Image 1: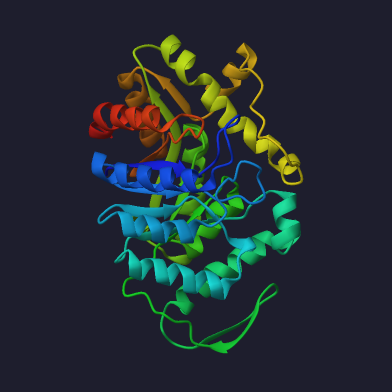
Image 2: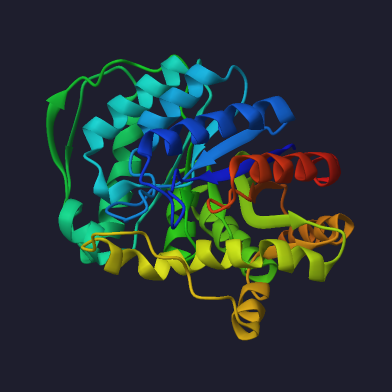
Length: 339
């Protein structure tokens, strides 16, 4: 099934000058390196207004990745659908699909940040309905025929959306809630999850139940599971090397709203305490010997009872480029052949 790599976010490192060009140059180099190293897909991730520049423009970056690569699948993991005008989203995705010669997978999600939803979206109350309508609009928009839409959130006049992608753009839904899973089963090609094994198994049941209601074959549905992977000689060495980097990645989500209106230097996460480390271990974070990581991934697949594809969410943006490529090499050599 291969192994994907991500989630690329082009974030700046705390304590370094704000060199946005360098951040994007490094992001594109890593995407190309993922292809060269044998990964089957590369994934980006979206947020807005974050002081470290967490990537806001996934399809722009996807087009640049397409120009730097030739075969790797390019996925958005995920694009926050309610923050986007559906016509513009359809046009931009079609353009990337043409530039990439059919390599785009459009992953979409609801979003959660109140700052983002207030500034760019329909608000928290309507984000689910907005996503549902966008999932209905997109395939019609890519058909090449004029469409219209009169929904609760979007009212579109009868127009033809161009350019038309030459090949179908697969859309997957990201999230964890039952509503998101069932929405994907009705309208999407698959689901993008980072839930622990037991929760993923429940998500598979929800999706299969929803597909049974509409007469859909579950074999037409794609399951993608992403998790942090950091292979090391032993558990202690792995956590000593990667713990603070993983903690900063997760801590930053709690800092995003505050950072939206903050100026000045980019703060670093507080030190990783033992309690915080134990909390990270309870998530889909696999740090330790490679054979143990492979066992954990096989357990995820076995419990799910479905053909799960994996993505290494091992872009740790506080790592410098050389350390990041070394980590990619280890995962490609020690994990990829066994999943």
